[in-house]
Amino acid sequence: MKIIAETDRLVLRHFITADDQALFELDRNPNVLTYLNTPPVEKIEVIQAMIARVQKEYETHGVGRVAVVLRETQETIGWAGLKYISSEINGHINYYDLGYRFIERMWGNGYGYEAAKATLDYAYNDLKLKEVFATAMLDHKVSRRILEKIGLKYIEDCDYDGVPHAWYKGENERSENLKDIPDRKPNKVD
Image (cartoon, rainbow, N blue to C red; front, side, top):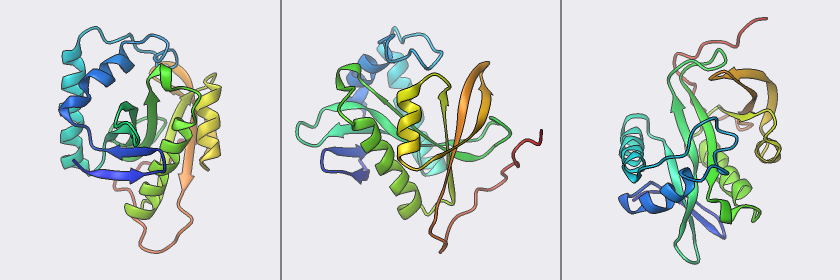
């Protein structure tokens, strides 16, 4: 089990099979999914398949969403991390997407900001990525505030699966040894 980042309160580590119950609690809650345009998960087998898929992403792309665990109790409270996106979204392909999602009873504790910031630091300092992207539904004010607070810049509105989203971009200010993203298409020209 690889740890990608740690904060005073959180550990961000690769998913393990035992995360299935916590992630099932997360993804079966319609309140959590309000801004995701997806129905609640009804069977834990869906979560188990997702964990297996993400574990393959670690091998294939070197990144994937990771479990967010409370340091003090070792409880899995959600996920965060990077995902390598190889399909076209908003005129981009083959890029790194920053995301996070937390169990509802954990909301309001600053974990979203803390995990997103740790993920961005990992992307810039450990992976030496030149840029990171993120999306949030236009009316998801909390998620948008987190993305802006960690330093991502709003670029434009975009359509994501037929739903209006805000498109964000973060650029690594450090200039040494940064990795370009292969096969990236340029932004759309209006």
